[in-house]
Amino acid sequence: MMRAMRIATFPFVMAVSWVVLNCASAQAQFSVPALYADHMVLLADSDITIKGTDKPGQVVVVDAQWGAKITATADAAGVWRATLHTSAKAGPWELRFKGSEERVLRDVLCGEVWLCGGQSNMEWTLGPGVGKGTANYQAEVAAAAHPNIRLFDVPNVTGAAPQATVTGNWELGDGPQVSKWSAVAWHFAKEVQAATKRPVGLIVSAWGGTPAESWASAVALRRHGGFDDTLDALAAADASKKLGPNTPSALWNGMIAPLLPYAIRGAIFYQGESNIGRWEQYRTLFPAMIADWRAGFGDIPFLFVQIAPFNYGKDKGEAARLREAQYFTSERVANCAMAVTMDIGDAGDIHPLNKQDVGRRLAAAALVKAYGKEMPWRGPRYMSGEAAGEGTGGEFVLHMDSGGSALQARDGLPLTCFSIAGEDRVFHAAVARISGTTLRVSAVAVPSPVAVRFAFGAADQPNLRNAAGFPASSFRTDDWPLQ
Image (tube, rainbow, N blue to C red; front, side, top):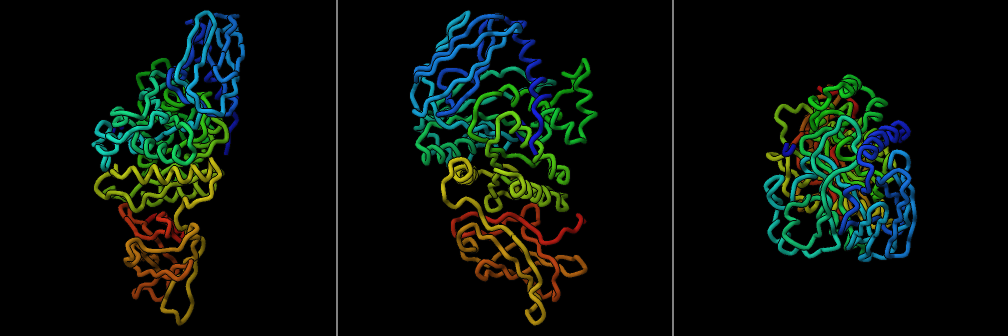
């Protein structure tokens, strides 16, 4: 691919502090992380923590134009931290730091801040850059007139230990530069801004082809298990020679830890393709990664994209099992939501060009989960099922949560991608029909059904959705092992 449970925080904080303190001791001069720069977006009407460095014992004054003013003192290692309450009004504002040096940040906005992570489908740019661009990107770029949507793109950096800072700058969403922005993040931000009427800051931290374990800390991975040998190797003197983007904890160290403690409203995440071969592990690894991010950023809404249909070649059900692991995470981990993409995939391209609907579906979930709005945001979900009984033509009945509106088939066509099996566990293509909030599934070859599967092929693109236009995730009624 291109460029391609909560845990205790004490060990993690110590690890980050070790790097910060050592960097600070070496520099012993005024600094703030690169995220604190002209045009940045701060989380509105919130207590935020700002960290920096200066000479040991130096008093640092942080003076915000909206009326907040605080002081902090650099400790013996040269590190200072201050908590500042941000404005409920957007601005623009100035933010002044005065220590051994003076620095003024201009055009600072207060609004909504979202961390956007994952692999190449999150990294994929609106126009050609990371990828070949998205559908209708020329018109999208030409119409870009959103100076209050701003983006900070975290460079692709690995680390053997948590790093103190990153490089980069904030860009405004009102010109041709948005062509190089994450397409999913852009479309997400447009929807959020339209609904909240607030500025939106996007921090994009994504790297193509990377697995979930790269985005989790060493502390979280040791607690999860299965990665100790690699993590032990990172402690060796030549660890930097062994680092790569797929190294467990390497991207957490280089691209997530340096963002702390920047205050965010929530996270959106598009990843999973690189873990398909380890779908069973992903059932616990992905929730552990989410808990790890929340240990650093707080109990944020975590919204993610279910992997899209794609022909993986020799797939024997692994892709559907990975989607299933993602679905279980959305159902079992609090304050999570999943955007389903079963209807907008591309069997021949792991990078579907329709990123507009991905961003819109994530935004719908955000408006419900983070902003308390009442609106449609999810598709039909399987709840329970049973054989209909004798004299019913061998039907299996699926009871569905329709997602707040009527079940339907896209374009009014017959429902697709259903299969059904009897006691022999051999699945046959099936016919399905809608009956209120249930689906009745049958096949001539299976007179006594015991199980149904929906869209369990890696590249299946089914047409089951609800009247609000949100598609159903793949699902199954059985718990049979992979064959």
